[in-house]
Length: 183
Length: 187
Image (spheres, rainbow over the protein chains, first blue to last red):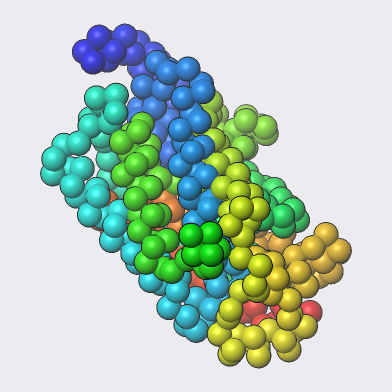
């Protein structure tokens, strides 16, 4: 473990410097934090180790289909308060995840590679409100958030690929205008 | 057993499995549950265009793309092996509303009358698919995460910003579904 840390230090600081411009305090992205530190261990693993995440994704995709989470109709019911299904499902997921995270923290559970599990506190910024409402407006139109979009394609709704391409375009436009937007 | 698997799964079974994905990802590789970052990785990989926000080592985040690929593959497996042939059962109130807009096909996960390549050339299809996708992509990055990253991962870690984001998602969704979508569906 100690060796691994030391081995990674130069690389780490290089990435840090490289990313420094990105990570001024306007960048509250969890994922960019990930980019500089959480995945340090990744370098030690061959690329095919990533198939374990694909395996988890497969389970996720199966549940998405079987519980009708990816149904446009279920999302419409949710936003019209016409069904408890989605509320029960997301609520259960949050409670189960919350208990798991609390247990991981309490017992200082390590990863299967013996690394400590790290959490990143998020900082508030106005983007969570403005971007959040924007996301919600889109969610009720497409009837799917990003995860279900991938699953919808898997069920044979190939036209949803256009929705994903458009979502990538939306992300790109956000990146382009990012410095001008209130945060 | 197959019969049992074929019927729609209840919210508590599905919610429990989805909730367990959070600790599994943490334990197998210190990964934080999230999907929408893939959209950013796609930008970084394909069209970084010298934009600061897309200049990072996206290859280090490749696990997330495998995860998304798994979701797609999982959906294929679920439909082919344990698919439910019956149409989705919705609240009659919703069905009554949708039939007014000519939507009565419940055989697919998305209504065929809205989501099809032909529909892309209609105004309402264009707004729903291209406009909706655009808002999802822009909003999730602006908010710093989507339903998985904020509502599930963030809330489970008791992050107040994630609660604010989740509440905002719901506000946007309620406004769209109840106040704006009826006009779009009428187009």
